Image 1 (cartoon, one colour):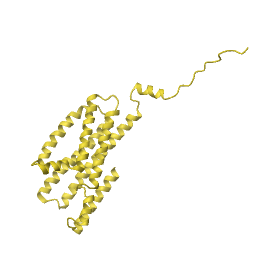
Image 2 (cartoon, one colour):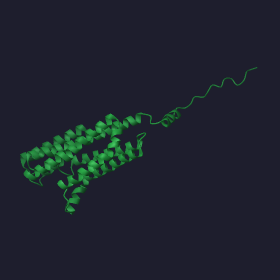
Image 3 (cartoon, rainbow, N blue to C red):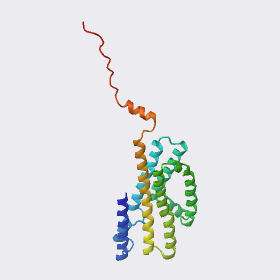
Image 4 (cartoon, rainbow, N blue to C red):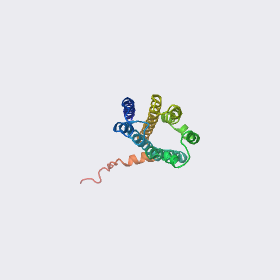
Length: 235
């Protein structure tokens, strides 16, 4: 995933550089080619990758909720709820639900959207905190690193880029840098999340979860017949 992210970021930078150099008009073949690779555009290769990555993360969360041993019912619910949220995020990446709402209503997903998202994310984090404390040190650190990368890109850098775009517009080098950094951080956060979940599931699968699992493992090995000795003696 790290290689794919690097390729997408490099292709996006090269495409925008070509657009700045050749000044292709909107609607031309060159302009439409740039949109295929530009990280800040929609319905292109980067959004397809991000949608698939979010969907993979959701599937892994469902798997963690299902196979993790000694998981409290409330913690299983926490994993499932987070997985459902990631399913919505994966669909929104391509279907752009939030833009549909913005186009059909007076609601804006700019500053007003952040005013809603920030409290929701904070409440979700507080609800998840007990489970986070019960996780292993390695998994907890990886999940926190993924959250910092993703939220830093989606919340912090995106806010800065939108504020700058409102002042100077999007056709500036600084906006291109900010938008590229934002999308790259988001993709890196999801990559770290997927890695952490795969690592956790690998450890769960390699460790017997309970005495019942050990009994099942013993039943899988056929028992050798006992030596009953001689049943009689020859005369």
